[in-house]
Image (cartoon, rainbow, N blue to C red; front, side):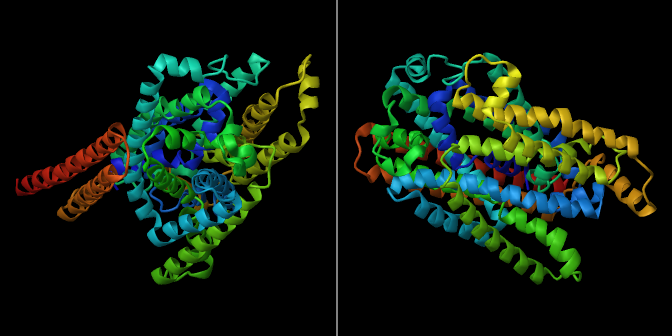
Length: 554
């Protein structure tokens, strides 16, 4: 796939309905600090461009777990498979809950029913379309979501009388830190650990599936740079509507969304769209939420299915590699994971002590971080025994278990000599991010490095696999252009350009919805941007076709 499609899906993987529900609810009281998560993401994507995107593509694998097999052997292939699958399920359940909060607010139905309904819709789209369709739609939805959120932010600024008025009325007294912090050094620790966490989250073998589909090394690196730019742009506009709501509708209990219970604040973006944007925009936002969540949940549906097919089903149950059997198994696994995610999403609705943002951080840090350490360091540290992979995960899980079940506010206050109790936000962020990242950096990461002391020369077969892995990741992928490959490159320009023009026509029809002149003008602007970009893509595809023909004639 070309760089712009891969970059779009890498960007969309960092988005889901969670971005416009849980994170917007956090923005009401968390101030500018909530944007730190996405700035850290952008930093990670830039490092993708500098280093990791190329290494990921150059592994020359279909599933990232195949890279684990080459680097650490078959035992670790199974360990990483069965450790990664439940992690993806938990993340997808959180994303599904984020989508359900928005859908529940729009349709005014209980969130439990929404989890089931929305879960089956996303499952159907992922099952029927597969990963290629998801990646293709990611680009279209990225454009639509970017345009819509940009327009929403412009409206928020205009209605506030300027960006200064918006920020002064919407941000808490401590504008950067937000409410709920009594100890400034705890926030500094959280701030630094967020950058470290997102660096590991965006630069590791497990998440390399973002780039393994790129046409070649050059396209993979450009995709990382595109994802970085899109994330920085999004961070600058996404939270403005939430801060507008904080300044103009500060009491969530007055929003009329009692059905959401303790999650009412997570509907802040919906309140802005419903009350400040023209009639019809809520429907567009709803479709965008489904699309964003589909691109994220794909990691727990199509990707998990792919991992099990390539690392479990094919090598042990389908050794003849029959494509029809593999495809059927992939669909069955996708459906199975969809049902498991829905069940997990229903379970999360019963948890009242953690918001969606805190739950996302806990899963990413305490559950996911032990897997990320060996899957990143293995590119730099060669002489480790194979058991370093599963051994590091085991040590990391013990560290996470102690933090999750052994650390209490009273213990922290006693160890750190605090004179007054911590605020609930302080302890939640300390436990979900600072202690998790810090504990793994001080214990789990050194353990992996110390395994080099026990390194012994592997068997000839394993040595050949390890050499193959490192030779691959150090050798750029260069695709020789042929007439057939160039035709394949041109197709996405024409296809997605046409879909964007069709979307522009659909949005333009919303001018028929009863709105004032300004409201109808907003739809005209969105349609004009979408249509203009679609025409540019169609033109670029035709120009590329003409240039390619001249090149071959020459």
